[in-house]
Image (cartoon, rainbow, N blue to C red; front, side, top):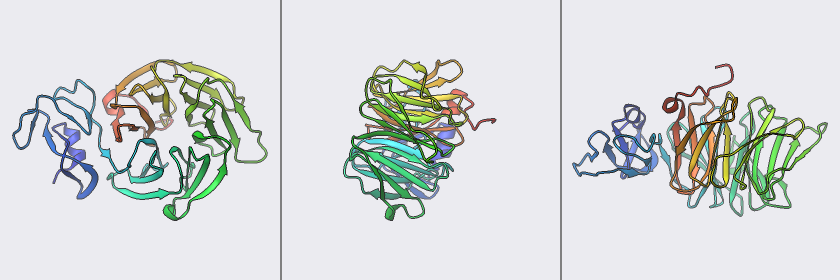
Length: 328
């Protein structure tokens, strides 16, 4: 029996093809095992270059690190992913109209959530992890109780236009909603706070993320930029440029020191928040990257793509970045 985590940690084998088991459980991917050192299948068949479901890979790793594992199940594009605050659950939303829940440790699918009548393009857990919210082209935000997710769907609000992105502030006081016209609304959950309307992007706001202290909001847009906003005033603080197409995903590391952005160009960029400079760029997927999210400990970054795969990256190991919780 192959233990996938141990094998990848030793960098001796990668998987691509038949059924792979992970700690005694099927992890939902179809795999074959390849020997990294000799570039041969274990059956003895020579392959000059391995290109498999775990990403671009050669025996010299010239194309970058291999994904930790691949989760498959959606019938169409994976548009968004979100980790629960405790890191034990990963949610994914798709153009197939479903939300799926995955065990983050084993890769096993836990539930399929149905209710949306069109693409699901945005996901966010409340800070306490008890509720998952989803939004999309059917102009609704749906609320799912994690105690019984498959039976708990309800419509929280119907909007006049398609919802492109949403995010809760870590302090639980504000939900940010981005729309197709490039506007952002900061909606307070308490009635004693004023709603803030933000404009600045020239095209749709595809992604939103708050810093851990809730003071800054990052937004990624079809206009190719990442922008940082003061959540108290709505004022623009910075514009980050570098992507060659739509920016479809943004995510802060748990300590707020780095920001990941990804999009149409198939790359992930890791921005240093102190300098505003991109410290690393990953050639991550073979198609648009629609989603990115850090695990709560900051060591793993999940990305979801139009290539219908979800990839988990050992960011801290591969790039020697300290991205853990604030104060770590």
